[in-house]
Image 1 (tube, one colour):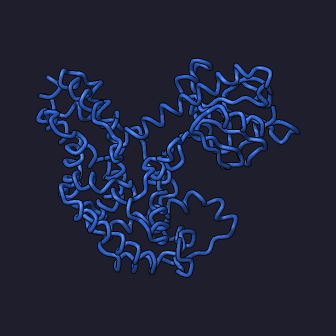
Image 2 (cartoon, helix red, strand yellow):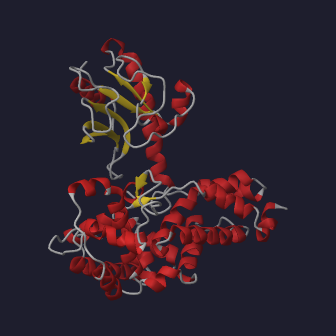
Image 3 (cartoon, helix red, strand yellow):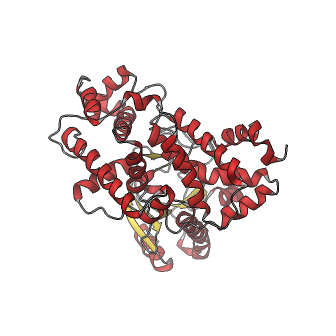
Length: 438
C-alpha cells in the first residue's frame, strides 16, 4: 500500500474527515459539520523530509510515514512515559531508530503530545492498521465534542459539568474547585491579557476575579446560567478595576501613532530576519496589543469578545448585561476606530503604509517594548486564538475588516500552567477559609 492508496483508504473508511496539505504532508482532520475552523488533527501522511523533520529519512525511495494522534493516555499505555518536548529542530530523546519500517514507534518530534508513527505500514495487516487508526479517530471525536462544548464563549457550551463541580466543591472537594478554576481560568486570563497588555497584570487580575467568584459561589443557587453569572462578575471587574500602568502610557490612537512614528526604522538583512523571526513576531503582537489599549475599556472588551473570540452577540450581551443592539454598536465603533488607525498606519495589510514590524523590532528592543531575553507574548503556547475560537464574528462582511480581524485572531492563546499557583494562593487566602471549612 503506497501513500496515495492509504489516503484513499482512510477517506473511504472514516466519516467526517477532510484532508489538506500542511507542513509538507497530507493532514487529516475530523470536522464533520465544518463548525470548527480546521477540525481536529488526528493523522498525517508524510513522504519527504522537512527542514526540521529528518529523523525518519523520508527522502528514501518509496518511504512514507503515517503519524497518528493517540493522545497522552493512549500513548502511555504503549510506551510508558511521555518524553520531554524537544528543542526547536531537535527530536525526542528516546532509544528508537526512527528510520525503521513497519514498526509502531513514538513520533520523532511530537511524541511529547501523544503522537505515534509508523513508516510504510504493512498492507498485509489491515486489521492492525485499522485498530491504530480507530484509536486516533476516536480520540479526535472526543476532542471535537469537548471543543464544541467546553469553550464558554461558544453557543454549544453546556453548564452541566460546572454545576456538578460546584456541588462537589460545596461538599468540601478542593479537587472539584480546582477543576472548575482550571476550566475557566485560561479564558479569563486571555481576555485579561488583552485588556491589560501585561502578563503580570493579567495574572493578578485573574486571581482577583477568581477570589471574587469563589467568595460569591455560595450565593449561586443553580437556578440561572452559571456561564453568564461567572463572566458577568469577571467582565464587570475588568471594566471597574483600577488602571493598569500601560493604560496611562497608551492613551489614544493619535498618541500611540505619534509614539510609533518617533521610533527609528531599521532595515534588517535576510539573515537578521531569519535569526530574529520570533522577536519580530513578538514585536508584532506587542504593537497590535498596544492598539487595543487605544480603545476605551468597554470597546476593548466587546472587541476582544466579539471579534477575537467570535462570541455570539446574544451571549456577549448577556455576559455584559447590556442589550444585543448595544453590544453590536460598541463592536462596530471599536472596529471602525481600530481599523481606521491600522489602515492609515500599519503595513501588514495595506502595504503602501511604511510601518513594518521587522523595521521597528530593534527600536522596540531598545525602548523595552520587546525583551529579547524574556518574551511576553510569543512564548509558552500551543495554539492560537483562532484555533480556540473557531467561529468568526457573525457580522463580518467587509474583506478588509476580515483581514484585520484575522491578524488579531492569529495571536497566541496562552495556556500557562499557573492555575496551580493561583489555586494554592486562593486556598491559602484567609478571606476564603470559610469556603474551605478551615
